[in-house]
Amino acid sequence: MTKYLVQNSGPLHGIVEISGSKNSVLPILAASILSSEECQLEDVPGLKDVDIMCELIESLGVKVQRNIEENTATINAGIIESSVAPDDLVMKMRASMVVMGPLLARTGKAQIHLPGGCAIGDRPVELHFKGLKALGAEIDVSDEGLVTSKTDGLYGADIYLDFPSVGATENIIMAASLATGTTLLENAAQEPEIVDLCNFLNKMGARIKGAGTDTIKIEGVKELKGANHVVIPDRIEAGTFMVAAAITRGTILIKNMLPDHVKPIIAKLRECGCEIYATDEGVIVDAEGKDLKSTDIKTLPYPGFPTDIQSPFMALLTTVEGRSAVIETVFENRYMHVKELKRMGADITVKDRCAIINGKAELKGAKVDATDLRAGAAVVLAGLVAKGVTEVDQIYHIERGYENFVEKITALGGIIKKVENA
Ligand code: EPZ
Image 1 (cartoon, rainbow, N blue to C red):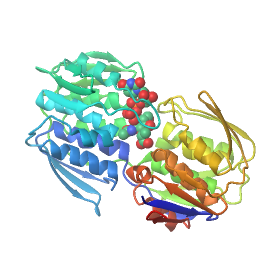
Image 2 (tube, protein in one colour):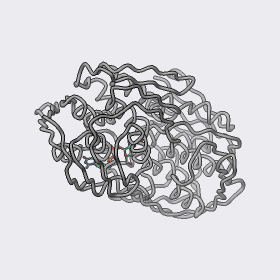
Image 3 (tube, rainbow, N blue to C red):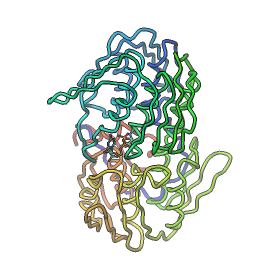
Image 4 (cartoon, rainbow, N blue to C red):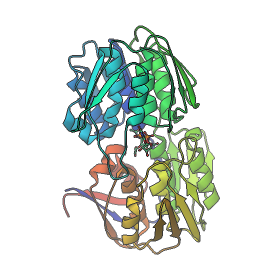
């Protein structure tokens, strides 16, 4: 197994360029199968999850040409030969679920295995099914978790989401785009990735209004054209590098990021004492020589504090003066990184959904696991300030969601290298 060896690196300095958004490009790749014409995407990040999504839509008969160096992808779904998502790919990546809506809309059927839970929670998908059934899909789930669905034609409906699920919102919007009639989706997810998906769909000829609010109206159309699109920057990667500047008390210029997408992260880092300002070249996070203070965070659906930055931010809170509280409200089990940070000397206690961090711990290098994508980033950031060497195992999680992670951190002065089983 490959690992990362991370060393105490002192303050990070320099420039990092943010890649295209993983959580935007995945549904957009799925959406491209809604059209029989060619779609061209730019700023497609070179990530394992993107590889899996491309492999998945290729298995349906869709033609995909990717240029990893140029971060582009061309998709041609002129002919869809299969509506069966291969189990092995679905099991590798839960986001595969978002091919269900497009397959139903384009072919009238879809077969996919329930993706199952993961480290951060059970991850049920009943809201996806509630919405697709309202649009006219028949859905059957076998005892083994095989989902088969079909429709004689989707029609518009009024749908209320019990929770603003990102994936359910995406599946429903994509299915409703080709339904007969109008769909009103209420309590929809408002993430920037939903807006990016809807901008792409509207370029294809969809008629979607309200993306980015909790109420989205989709007027179904007969067919969708091909379209070209530049994927938005990854706000979670941007947030991760903002926290990297703070935890190392360095100064980083972050290029190709949208400050509007990370307002809660900017607010909380400022509360800790960081200086953050936008320039023509990008956003500067300056924690140089600052005596950062504790703060409290509570994760919420967008526009609240993003759950995906909870673990990297907790790593920061272990190093600042004072007591902080972290409340995770989006996932029921997203504290797997606490055990790993405590192995490094952090003082954290968890009760129910609340973690209390007594800051200013002297972190020390240890053997730790990347228990999920963002927890992996958290222990790497902690390793940059811990005394000694931190060995991070299960780094495949990290490489699913951070393009050129080692190279970007190294370019900022971080001491990190990828080794075969050390
Ligand atoms: C997306 O996952 C992201 N993944 C996640 O990022 C992110 O953490 C999450 O949204 C929340 O922002 C992608 O976009 C590929 P949800 P998704 O449906 O769509 C519950 C990362 O690190 N729920 O909004 O799966 C669910 O159990 C990943 O990049 C139901 O109960 O998230 C969870 O507790 C991790 N029933 C909460 O809602 C449902 O039918 C949020 O899930 C669906 C979801």
